[in-house]
Amino acid sequence: MQCGARFGEEIPQSRVVRSRKKSSMISVKSKVKAYRDFCFHYVKYPDEILKSDNQKFGFGVTTFLLIILFLGVANYKIKPTDVGFITSIGEAFLFVGMNILLAAASLYLISTLFGPPLEGKLVVSIYGTYLLPVMLMTVMAALLSILNLFSIVVVLLTISFLYAVLFLPIYILIRLLVQQSNNLMPIYSYMSYLVLFHSFFFLYMNIVLNANMTKLISWLTQF
Image 1: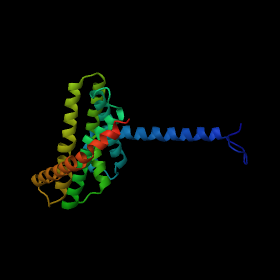
Image 2: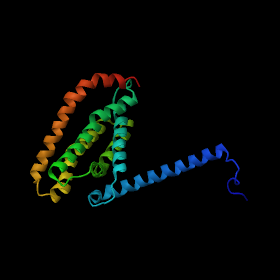
Image 3: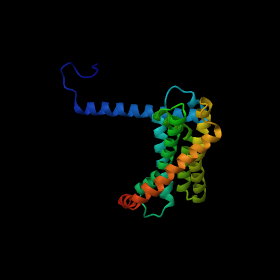
Image 4: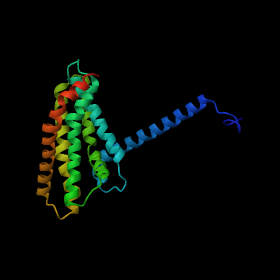
């Protein structure tokens, strides 16, 4: 019984393609399993991310992208039928995704100014891990939107948004920054985050978003 091709024999292209597809499928399955295990573990024990030496940057980014995806699904079902799916995804990113990114940027700047400084990837790892409940709520919202339970969907999305951009960053500051630094008292951590985040939010909404809203909507509605 022969295994593979003989020495010097040209390997058929179809076999090469099948081998590559098999390797890709194995890689995808292993990554999906790793992310599933990550979700199961850190939903139960979210604070362990603060003690972990292994950064979860990739998982944090994946969680963020899934939040945008499921928000887009819910937004697509709530919106009128003439709104495209890509438009709904774009709106979810513009109005929710950007606010989550602004919250992460605020956390990073506060840690840099008041110490101990955190790497950007570590901020994403920690924040993305704590966003797992938000992802679960957006999954529920997407499923309920398919059932046309829009009032419950709106409540879930409102809770998830407030949890993501107001409660979580302050909680992370308390657990991570205040406990490790004498430079920032708890009340000042609240104030620092709220001032910084709302400054970013004001600039984004009034300068970047307003200036480009017509152009962005025009581009998105082409899909």
